[in-house]
Image 1 (cartoon, helix red, strand yellow):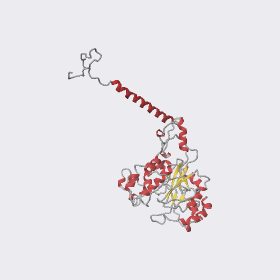
Image 2 (cartoon, rainbow, N blue to C red):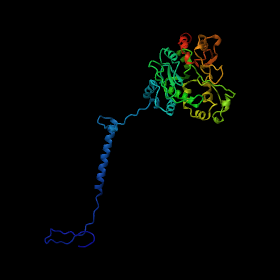
Image 3 (cartoon, rainbow, N blue to C red):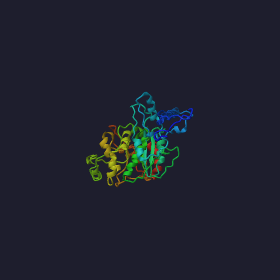
Length: 412
């Protein structure tokens, strides 16, 4: 046997059992085709399996494995983008978007950031299409410290309207306080998530924007009025609704006060966005239309500056809206409020009225029903004598005389 390459092969079939040695056979590698065929077979099987699984998911057949049936995530409808009515089929979707009923409860689990984002979203729509035929509602937004001592008077005001299609109610209280009203009350389940507020601080305007944002979630709300627990209505709801919804202006007071309590509160750090000549002052208790309300909740330019710079004796609730709306929408505001207050006694707070102050003559004067006491103001460019729709501040003890006199004097 020779060493080296291959083994010697002997042919045992030869006659003597011996034969010359054959040439060594070179070593042979494993055939490539045999390697490729299993991989090809595996690829074909895998493709078929995936195609079958995809077919089950798409068709949703009864034999589909639940693993492939992904659950739908529950998303609050106000966070969904409104469909665009560019095609005929989508017109019906837009109508459903606008016609969906408002939430029965004002409570939700959104953070302030999520709430303001959702409220600042305005669905695209064609003018005159996809809007409900019913008149727009007035959102009554109560900024309170806790209870609503004058709620029985407001319930009479709301219930005397002949229906709840003219208004909606939102209440912002101290965190932890829970309102308790029966289902028949307009205040039932109308409390919104709140945060603590302190007089004279930015947290007050944070609460106002929070109320606006909650009210904007109901697309049928067209006008927004801010009230306190000490406010009373001076006219029946249908008259208040007509006055506000027919107005071409929002009722935000704004005036230039050159004194220490006006321009003296201006902060130079607000420049260049706000100059001292643009600085305005006004009452906290505003009323505005939907367009301005959307602007306020979406304001990322002015409000952060006011929040950081305007500290007492600069009061955000007295200067932010009057200043910013004078800059951005001067022709849209009436430069007056529709909430009457009495500052004649001086001090940092208006007069408070108790049971002894409430009389027929007093209420008639507030409502503008006495010729000598009628106010003079402008409404839609014309002189008017009805200038105030609400009045404050009324103590809890004033409730009983108000309930006795409101049917004869105030009309509800």
